[in-house]
Amino acid sequence: MLAAVGLSAGYGDEPVIRELSLTVRPGEVLALLGPNGSGKSTLLSALCGVVKTAGGEVLLDGRPLLRMNRRSVSRKIAYVPQQSVFTQGFRVEEIVLMGRSCWLGPFERPKEDDLRRVERALEAMELQQVRGKPVTELSGGESQRACLARALAQDTPICLFDEPTASLDPRHALLVMEQLARLAREGKGVVVALHDVNLAFRYSARMAFLRGGRLLGEFLPEEVDGRILESVFDVRWTFAEGLAKGRRAFPA
Image (cartoon, rainbow, N blue to C red; front, side):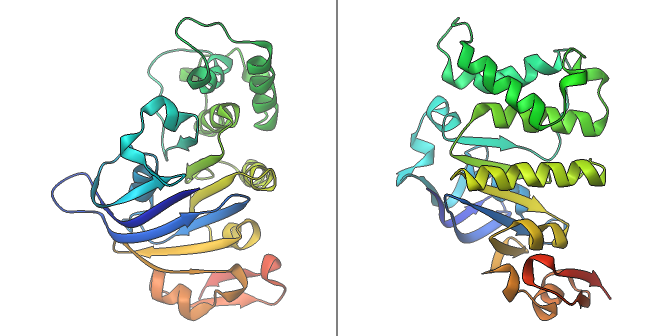
């Protein structure tokens, strides 16, 4: 289990997130929502140890994350940032195979199980046709899916995704969210930062709202109403009728 306890973190002297407590639970998708600059990306970075804390702590299975070595953390947490820029022309399948590096010793060659996981990840992200293509020649959406496939191949109990659908067309956005839901059904803890409220309604078990670096609250999808959304995004919302997972919200 992964937990932020009174966490403050940022990149300079002034913390971006402040005194924030949040728990990532196995077997569910937790959606992080909030306006630009609310701290979603910083929180995800802090949860995997990329950003150091200015106060509080992150606990991984009850142990302070910052006291663990990076190899151990990489075997527990996969993290896909909002944007990944490739500067070297590795092939797509090589990038995905890099997700297995934390499970291999120095100079150890990938085993059959590693290669099977890579194949499954390529298939899950529909990358078979570009598997031999240099990542520097991919479209933005293909590049994003290559990063996601690398995280799938890493096969960790906790997965953190920052705006994974931002560069994707509608079909691939749904494909990605279906894969995240599958990870949760397999017992993994999944955290995903989203701007699309309706994707959160459809796929998350909990919705956590951030604003100004603070956690405003956590809710079940069926508990979220127009008042909550307006307090977060400063715009009125209307809802289509239906069950919680079938609800759709629209800025009024």
